Amino acid sequence: MLTISSTKKVWLLAPDIGEDERLFVNEAFDSNWIAPLGPNVNLFEQELSNHFHNSNVHIVNSGTSAIHLALKSLNVKEGDIVLCQSFTFAGSAFPILYEKAVPVFIDSEKDTWNLDPNLLEDAILYYQKKQIKPAAIIVVHLYGMPAKMNEIISIANKYEIPIIEDAAEAMGSLYENKNCGTLTDIGIVSFNGNKIITTSGGGAIISNNINHISKARYLSNCAKDDIHYYSHSDLGFNYRMSNVLAGIGRGQLMSLQKKVEKKRAIYNAYETMLNQIDGITFLQEPLNAYSNRWLSNIILSAKLRDRISLDNLRNKLNSYNIETRFLWNPMHLQPVFKEAQFFGTSVSEELFKSGICLPSTTTMTDDDIVRVTNLLKEMFYA
Ligand SMILES: Cc1ncc(COP(=O)(O)O)c(C=O)c1O
Image 1 (tube, rainbow, N blue to C red):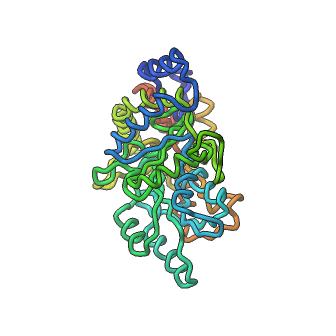
Image 2: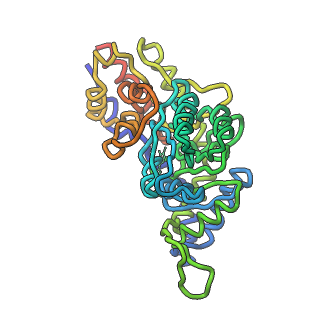
Image 3: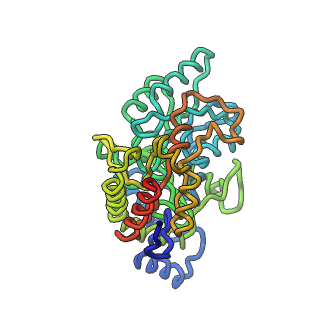
């Protein structure tokens, strides 16, 4: 018999807001800086730049906008091929269509669940034969786990294709001791409400190339010409982050490392409590990577899924006030991308069919984790 130890809701990913955030937001209210620009915006950009070891940073209203601006900064235009990791959230890929460029999806490898370098090269060679050079590669550090960047960067360099690093879920993750988001030409992060640090909605574009950031800043601020009256020579976007939200971000950034440690502790607790169940596996961290473990995920063997389907598992946990979610449904399976070409086999599809994301909120207590794992054990042993 399943027992409910508490009816408290255990969220998949709830925001974790502290006193510093309140202080910066109050300051914005008290000084009437409710405008889209203001001191918090400048300071948040500066503090993010410090965090990213002096990379140039521009903050915007979402991670999706940041990817759009990254594509614009690289001059991706109508008809260009953009090679994109298939196993991701749609925000990685939608901006390709905003520019009427052509998304081509690449499957993941099994070690990190990210862009498979061999398939990436297959795709580049396929287009090379047609004398087409892809305009950009979008690689994702999914669930906070760094992709195989040495291999991917070396392929991108060989064929001289720029990389956009989608670190939306990987704020605080490291690859060979370097911040995810700073390993290539352009990186982005997201501060959406479910991310490890949040501004309720927001994102940032990061680059060592000041020209990319200047262009992104110009386009995100409605492409205003540098004249004393309104003049627009280019098509612009209103993608700015407001001074109030930047205040939340400043406070959140101060607690990033603490949150990474808590996420890693949550993951370790799940692994310790569940790995004696035959048929449950976890995504292991490669030696050269340090994941923020944004979401703790488990993969269930076919045998376990025969005992209880993912749907039933999710519904059952939900009836106990515990929120879970399926892994991302790959982009090449999405109706909106049905025309897109795909290079791969079934790695991402299998992950989607066999995995589930467990509650990973940084305010979770040990009791919450025990409640989740006890229920799972009861379901699998029932
Ligand atoms: C991998 C990935 N890329 C891009 C995005 C888009 O970010 P946003 O929601 O801030 O637009 C998200 C998530 O939200 C994401 O998880």
